[in-house]
Amino acid sequence: MRLGLNLGYWGARSADYVALAQEADRLGYHSVWTAEAYGSDAVTTITWLAAKTERINVGTAIMQMPARTPAMTAMTAATLDLLTGGRFLLGLGVSGPQVVEGWHGVPYGKPLKRTREYVEIVRLILKRERPLEYHGEYYDIPVRGGTGLGKPLKLIVHPLRADLPIYLGAIGPKNVALAAEIADGWLALFCSPHRMALFRASLDEGFARRTDGKDRHQFDIAPTVTVVLGDDVDACRALVKPILALYIGGMGARGRNFYNDLVRRYGYEEAAERIQDLYLSGKKGEAAAAVPDALVDEVALCGPRERIRDQLDAWREAGITTLICATSTVEAIRTMAELVL
Image 1 (cartoon, one colour):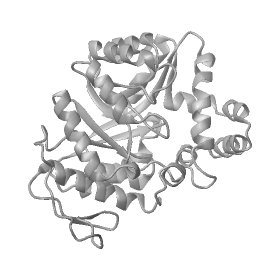
Image 2 (cartoon, rainbow, N blue to C red; image 1 turned 30 degrees about the vertical axis):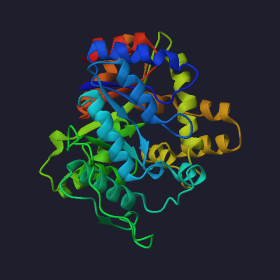
Image 3 (cartoon, rainbow, N blue to C red; image 1 turned 60 degrees about the vertical axis):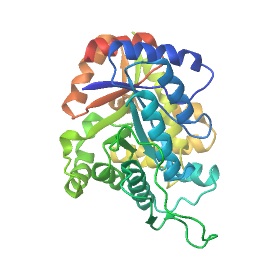
Image 4 (cartoon, helix red, strand yellow; image 1 turned 90 degrees about the horizontal axis):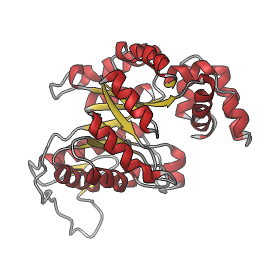
């Protein structure tokens, strides 16, 4: 099992992120990742970290597909891979309806279809086998019905890697299956190593549909896992609960919240409903308090070094290949390196 580091969004404390990424680089972490929602973007931030590090892979977890054309994403990926000497990992995701429609002003539509077309186009561009021409449900290149002056084009630069790794952020069963079918890795959030049986059928379905000859042993299962190091387990859990409450309660409308659906599948139906009711009523503190300790322990690593060490066996046995740590402390980064690498 390899280690990654997810630094999330760029914010008030981001001045420390360079030092954290450099320490992960020194310790032999596989990758460092940045994210985006409707604040800092993932590309600018990961470019900054790439320029400040030497060996560690740099990835986006995730770039929002509705925010960029596939061609723009392919250009960005090829450029970053060239600039970093082959260290770039392209993490993509559809995001959710609230952000897609409320921020980017794009219809949410059919996420599975959009993702499949998007990845196909990116791969076609990076391969450079012929000028790009693609006519699907979401992407029409060259566009028909315009001036008529559009023509198929080929990427000017020669990518360092035509098979640059593409990761997909996925939560629902069909999205996980799609990741196993067309991507090189799966970026999971709030993954529980004790619930991998819920994902196995989707992964198996996706692997069975692959047409590129790659198998499950070449596929990276890479969940982001919050790590909070400290002697007081309850105090450590208390730092994780507001994050879980935000996603379970507020990252989506009632009946259309993928994270709420996920913890329901884990068996926390009553807690999921209560957290959402409280959060949507503006009672965010009470929503955080309603997050069960057991759920925190399933999806995060909290407590002293010895407790985290004992919890890591479950992640290894679940087949996790890259455990991406979400933490903002050097101590946690070093402890994880000592326990895993």
